[in-house]
Length: 101
Image 1 (cartoon, rainbow, N blue to C red):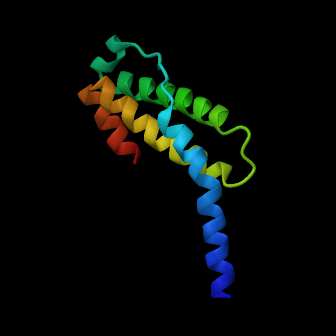
Image 2 (cartoon, rainbow, N blue to C red):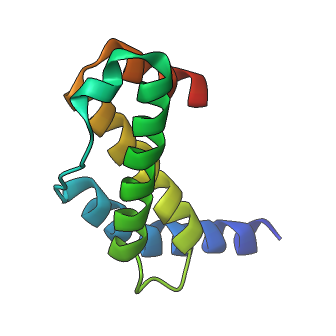
């Protein structure tokens, strides 16, 4: 039983690694309104829009995957969204992101 689980874990790790590497390397531009970030409600709306853009891109990046696609898309989304929020560097948007975790 342990050998089967270890073998499955190794297959998963080997198959998933290239997908994670690809998702960690791509660049993307997100569209948002800096004026909307002045309020908490506006930042929440912009956050939802940014998240949708990131999810769409991550799903496209992993469209060809048959194995562990859901996990790869979630990993990609989490990493890319966090990077986008840090790069935008707005206190309201950062607060919304922290609440979503």
